[in-house]
Length: 501
Image 1 (cartoon, rainbow, N blue to C red):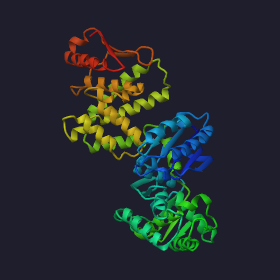
Image 2 (spheres, one colour):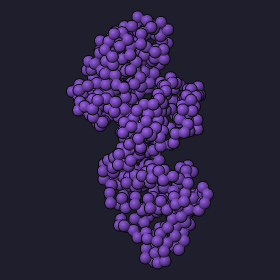
Image 3 (cartoon, rainbow, N blue to C red):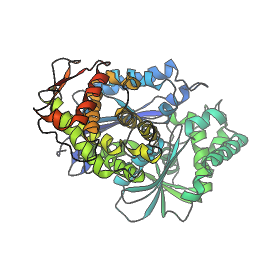
Image 4 (cartoon, one colour):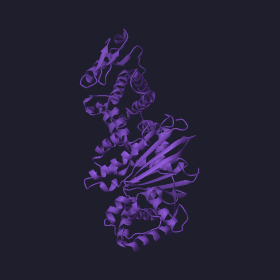
């Protein structure tokens, strides 16, 4: 990306939606605008974990206002990420569909550990460069992320299902502050976070930082009371709890530095923060300027280059972990991308979009045999399952699922992908991948000279694979497999014709 490029990150949190817009300036991103709205989607989940219509509408109304500010932005300049509430919501697909339509950009639901990684990226980018070992904590509305890192590298990441909105609803449902409620809330939080003690306890870090939400609000209140700016000492948490107990109710709560929108969730947030301090032996915590949205901006910048894209590193790690045949993966990837490029000749996609699709096709080729480590029988199904459940830094949940569908569909019947084949881009990627796997079946470089894959006009035009004279006689097994492949595609909206076979 060139200097001056505008980038935008949307953080669809459980309590608030945030929009951060920045301008790229020699590897740094300088803020040009920041918008925040309290939406409280996290309080809109019912017992069946469905998001209420009111909660959906609050979110959609906010996205509509953000969309007006993003008019003129291109797809590669914007990324919207959703966190714990939409990770939990059973009807999230409905909100994502409506949200995409309103916002004009897709919304990625990211896994908890990916959220943690991005939080650390945001925090570390806005801190002075240092070799100190850092503990970063972010208490959100329905989840809390903890990260250990050094420099720009996040080394240990975890997400826990405890947060300010969830704990306030559970232990302070009527907005009443009592000693018993605080005691029960802190005990419950420590029970959830107890497994963090071994990895995140004192001795594993030099300095503790808190990001966003609860930590920022507590730091503001302590500073307004005369404390050092941006510092949260353990005694300060006790002072704040006493102020809440003295007020007894949200309606009577008056603390300088506290914003009105924070009152309803401060009880739960403070309880979780107290639990973290006590469990991990923290004496003081610094409030960091960076947050999830900043990490999204820097990740968006890095995605512009294949070499710096953290997703490429995740793919390589998975390939090594499952001991795939690297030579075969590269062979399949090269052939698949050659066919995909032929399909795009004279097409409607810009070069940048084609490059991104080819990169993802290469990832699918690198991982198409990861299921072999589990079993040779139905290995494509095992591989798809692994990807749908993998911890893969850089990937949003829909991205991993799309990758899993390419792995699932690279062999066997196509009926299992009926719903996904409605996407013409996925259908083209899958066709290219399946043809490559067929032609590389002998695990050596295939002779594809004279093979040409073309596409007619229209969204559901026939794809035609043609070959040079004598190719069929030279490679009868490949020709046989390709005839079977054409038969498989004849039962889909994307027929494949063979010419010269």
